[in-house]
Image (cartoon, rainbow, N blue to C red; front, top):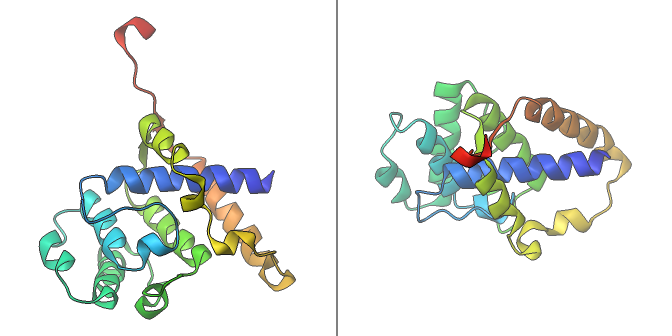
Length: 174
C-alpha cells in the first residue's frame, strides 16, 4: 500500500509542478530526475507562485545550470524558509537523485499554494510511461535506505492529506 500511496503522491506532485510551470515554454517537467538538472524548473516553479521575487528572463538567460540552481535554492531559503537541502553541483548532472529532488519539491509544495486541477492530474496520467520511470525505480531498496524511504513516504502522506484538488463543475452537474 505504501508504494501505491507514494505513486499517487508523486503523480499529484508532478501534476502540481506541471500546472505551475505551464506558462514557461523553456520548462518541461516529466519526471523527478532529469527535468530538474538545468535549474529552470525550480526557478519557474518559484516564479509562477512568487513573480515578485526575481526577473524570470534574467535567470533563464544565466549561462550555467549550477548558477540557476543556486539562484532557486537561495531564493527558496531567503523568502520561503526552505533550507538548502541540495547542492547545485549534485543536481546539475545527467541523473540527479530522484529522492532528493522529491524531498525538495515536496518542501516547495508545502510552502507554496497547493491547488491542483483534475486536468493537470489527467495530463500526468497520459504521459508516456517511460518518461515517468527512471533507473532509480528499478533498483531494489537496500536496508540502509529503508528509514529514508519510510520517512519520505510519511512526509508525502502528511503533505498530500492537505492537497486541494479542484473538480470543475459545469452548470448541469449540480
